[in-house]
Amino acid sequence: MRWCLAALLLIPRQDDGRVFADPKAKQRILEALHGRLTAPRPPVCESKEAWPAHRAKLRAAVLAALGLDPLPERVPLDPAVSGARDYDDYRLERVWWRSLPDVWAGGWLYLPKGRGPHPAVLNPHGHWDNGARHPVVQSRCIALARRGFVALAVDAVHVTHWATGLCSVGMMTWNNMRAVDYLESRPDVDKSKIGCTGASGGGQQTMYLMATDERIAAAVPVVMISYFSRILFANEQAHCSCNHVPGILRAADEPQMTAAFAPKPALYISVTGDWTAAFPKEEFPPIHAVYEKLGAAGRVESKHHEGGHDYNRAMREQMVAWFNRWLKGIDDAKAAEEAPIKAAPLDALAELDKPAAGDTGMRGAVRWFVENRTFKEPSLSRERLLDLLGETDVQDRAMKPSVVGTADWGGGTMERLTYPSEAEVDVPALLFRPKAEGRRPAAIVLSPGGKRDLLAKPALVEELVKRGFVVLAPDVRLRGELRIKWDLNCVAWGRPEAGMAAHDVKRAVDLLAARDDVDPKRIACIGLGDMGVAALLAGAIDPRLSAVAASDLGKTYGAGREHPILPRLLRHGDLPQIAALCSGRLWLNRARPAADFRTIAECPDHADPMPHLIDWVGR
Image 1 (cartoon, rainbow, N blue to C red):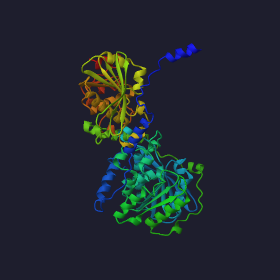
Image 2: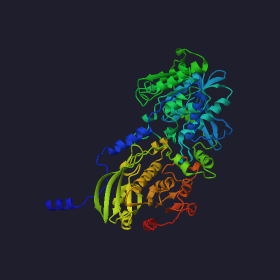
Image 3: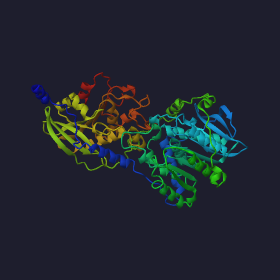
Image 4: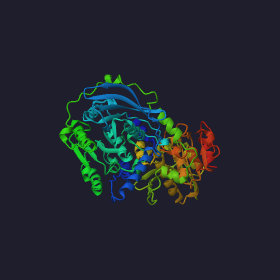
């Protein structure tokens, strides 16, 4: 038994490629990066005179982030009612209207008794079970209808096509804008008096309408408004993808968007039991300061409640009182007191719920965005690509690498090191070099699992070193030791994960070019598997790379590629246009469709690309 144990102890353990000796090093880097990219930005009003221009600029930036630049054509609404039911003090109709040529949006319309025209309130809902059919959503609509408001609860949708800029909130915002069109078209609605309210995801939709639609006359966002930093987590948790808008944090933070509603009346409702707990003390004061600067301090209020995420009776009464005051001229809290409400059972609503004749599943929305938001003539310059990747204002640190340790490896040596990328990011890497003296060619190798992959399957690195290459295997963001599931956070930041990886490659070029043993004119980048896109981006943004190779590039975004996420790319180009920025120094295996790449790259189709890849890089 002792002999067996001793024998086992002599067996070398697989090197995991770890560079960070401190297990908390990764956490510190990622938390600092997250903190900077998600740093709260309070709203500021420089002057009453400058405010309209500021609002217009913010509105344009938010619409662009939502993918609504330009706004789609307002096709005929062709409204339809698929079912209706009369109750003692209101009428309920299941209604539909055309949002895009082949897309219908739906909602539940609560009509007050008596002749109009009435003020109206849009009621987008959040992640309630059964959506607008949930008793909490029904209750606020019934409460509004009883007080003489036309209340419309719009069905939420979840649809994304990141490459064209289509996101769920963008589509919901457009459906809500078309819902306002529908309300304005009704003779029983006073179109000068349309409000909006919603809780959670419905509060989010309210926020985007406050920032983008001038027709909303008063608003009540509930249990939603906070700095984005409270919702975009530094760990791997993520809210539903519907909360993530491409590059929204480059455009505005949440309080900035809702403050753009000023000087129109807005009531904010928050609670102690969710992310809005600090709203009255932290987010609301700068919003209130904007209203004060505009001479409208009496038009904004904050109401804070003990409890969790909700839209309960007390909140509804405050909301109704607010709309009574600003849309009906009734400033009496008692007029908003709520009698008991009985929501309709689901089976009763199901009897009314007959889909419209068009597409209500949002497949038509994807088709429309692909047809209307995909480039007709490519316009993907290096400068535009840098903007799409959020690279235009990145600040780098001085290149001062730190060598953690050195060991013999194969016929040469292996260094464990870190090198600085942007601001707080230190990239862990392994550097392999041959024994030969003098300046050598170099290759940066990116693998899906990071540098650990290359130690587990060292054939590629071994052959490159054998041929005299200095090889750098970095754990670029967000792989290897820097791995974290932040793809949706990256969307909101406007810093796509593959773009951050490409930036880390650019800094790797800085590292290698400064070494005495590397020929700075012969530095290549190789992307294996799904890291091929990162390698392609690195070659496009850094012309110093003398060769770029992707072992299995796969489909273009126009052909249906989804990952890695590159929001809005198809507005200006696709992978072939990125490849064109690497023209003359590019090798792509299994690029699809290959014909799109053949004039700008060597495009073989090898089942085992490694021998051919090594020959090409080492030529």
